[in-house]
Amino acid sequence: MPHREINPYEAMQASLRVASELYGLDDALFKVFMAPTRSMIVSLPVLMDNGQWEVFTGYRVQHNLTRGPAKGGIRYDMNVTLDEVKAMAAWMTWKTAVVDVPFGGGKGGIVCDPNRLSIGEKERLTRRYIAEIMDIIGPDRDVPAQDMGTDAQTMAWVLDTYNMHVRRTENAVVTGKPLGLGGSLGRNEATGRGVLITAREAMQRLGKPLAGATVAIQGFGNVGSQAARLMHEAGARIVAVCDLKGAIRNDRGLDVHALLKHHLETGTVTGLKGAEPMDPAELLTLAVDILVPAATENQITDENAPQVRAKVIVEGANGPTTPEADAILLEHRVLVVPDILANAGGVTVSYFEWVQNRQGFYWREREVNERLVDYMTHAFQATFATTDKYKTNPRIGAYILALDRVAQAMKYRGFYA
Ligand code: GLU
View: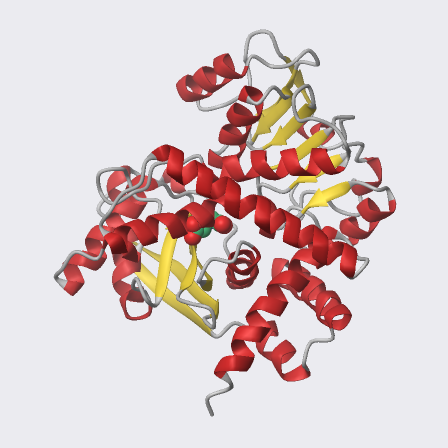
């Protein structure tokens, strides 16, 4: 049940305001953080397969560049708006600061329905978009990656277009690339693995093991499906999942390997043998140990938050919980692992990919995964230490941790005027 009328940028600003007040942020810095550094809007003429030209709208927003080049995905979706991209870019500033990787925040998007584009149309659209934003991206400027509606193939076109323009190999210009083209082992599952790591830490805080815990997952894209697989392998019981076509459940635990196979073959989770269909809205209010919203923004709102019965929410998606819902969840003592921590595994391994590209030396999968555990557990501990210190909820704790890191870097640099 999407609540698109809730503006994600206003939701970001609301949390930023609360965190800044509690932290005592300098007013000048607060004003700087409230607005992105740079927003670019481009019109993209694309020759469609039917011989007609369509003009698409694309965005690239850089929220803050203090700690390093902008970093963040490119989203292909009909609901992309400038404010959504601005929100996501800001969340990337906070996310990269929470896990302490040397990037700022960026995000891009194109208003399109990726499922209705042919592969050729998608390639031409991607290339035209990259050609238009060429001047503001680059390994030391702004490094895109995948997000909703884009994948490793899209990133390969980004790499090729950029490299053709600069006339040299610059594979650190984009992350989430295919293996063999500068991609990193472990990147494809990194966001799901980060969800697993933070879910385990959250359960530990409640004094419970992840093994045997019940889990419901909203969304079965890259994040939801990888989280399902990894949490299942860690011994958790995945009792419900959904996608845009519907939801399924089995209280004894879904057969996750059969589910992944079924999803690969049919493109949906619905119709899995041994599972009952259910109302997708109901999935969010199931009495489970862990709820993983891994779809899109504004899914847990003041309307359904009072009915949420999960003990822990691990936000695989960006912005799935509205600020009003947050207050209700806090009152109901639901432990929320906020998006800027819970889904930061993706950008952390993007950082590893960028480092490997620049070194020209590639790591083993085990090294990637071990380093990811190290970064994520540190970030989790630091977030909860800040949460406890400021006697707030973990979202505001994560914002304060991030604000503090970005603000300190800005103070050293000063304002160039
Ligand atoms: N799109 C992902 C996110 O929202 C990954 C970004 C990246 O790897 O740069 O975190």
